[in-house]
Length: 94
Image (cartoon, rainbow, N blue to C red):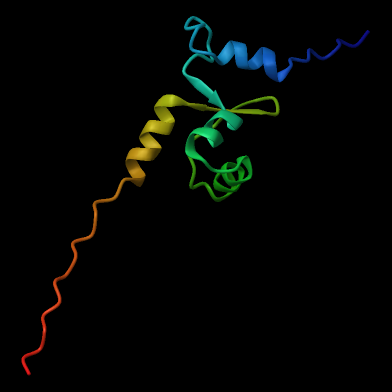
């Protein structure tokens, strides 16, 4: 007899990932949907970054994708840029 696959709903996974459950192994991780909302980008953009290997590192469990807070923080720090110095324009003497 074959074992039946265990299915877990998105709601159940969200409750595992929540900060209110710090003892769970997924504590400190956010879902793809939550990160997209935080960064104000589409989930599709996160997936494109994943394919291009330009986004934050992922943790994949089955078909679900999660992002660690630590990985997101490191990724954001690497993307940080110093503002460009503006050049003052010299007026030519006339």
